[in-house]
Image: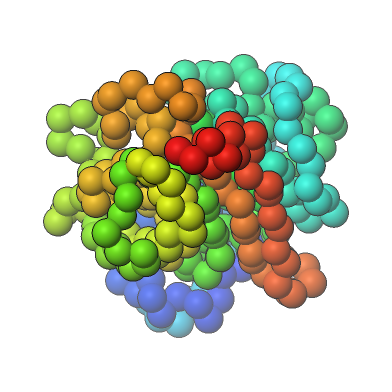
Length: 304
C-alpha cells in the first residue's frame, strides 16, 4: 500500500448526497476520474464510518467519508516553463494569471507545456489529489480562454476548494466579446448543457443535460458586437460559449461554436477576470483580479 499523503473527513455535509454511490460522490467532489476513486476504495483508501465499503455503496444521511490520499505513484509531468503570472501564493494555494493558448494540465493531446508543468519548473509543489496529470487542479478554464485560476498546494486545501466549486459557492466572473448587439442589456440563461450527440468534442443546450445557469450584463456596446460581463452560477464545460451560441450571439473568435473566420482576434474573446472563494485555512473570503488582455482591449478600443 502507498504511503499516505494526508487524510480527509467528509462529515455532516452528506444530506445532499444521500442515496448516491460513494464512487460517484467522491469523484464529483474531488474532480478526479471515477475509476481512480474505485481503485482507492478497493485499496482501502476510502472508507465510510471507518469501515471498508464496495464502490456501489449508497450513502446514508449520517455517514462520514474517510479519505486517505495516497502519495502519487507516478509524477510524469516534466518541468517546462510557460508564460504564467503568479498573482498570489501561500502555503496552501497558488493563484495564476493564465494566458490564452496554454492548457491548465495535460489532456488527451498530452501537451508538454501547461500551467502545472510551469509550476513544477518553478519548484512549486501541488497537491497529490489528481496526480499524475492533474495534481492541484481544482478547476479549469479552456486553453484559449485567458484569466485567473487557483490551484491547491496541499491535499486539505484541494478538498476545501474542490467542495466550494462542487457546491457552486465560488464567485467567478468573465468578460467576453460577443457577435452582434444583444437585444437585452442583462439577463439570465438557465438552460441545461450536455455533450453533443454527433460532435462529441462539443457541448450544446439539451433537455438531457445538466443544469447550467449564467448571468450576463452588457457593459459596452460596439459597432457590431457587445462587451459582456458573465457570472457563473454553475460550472459546466464551455458553459458561457454554449449559452452565447444558444442566444445567437457566439463569442468572437470561437472556432468551435462559430464556424466563420474572425480576423479581429485569433482565439475566443473570453477572459476570466475575477475569482472569489473562501481561503481553505483562514476561512476568509479572498478575491483576485486579472486585467483584460491586449488582444481584447484592442477590439474594444477599435470599436468592434
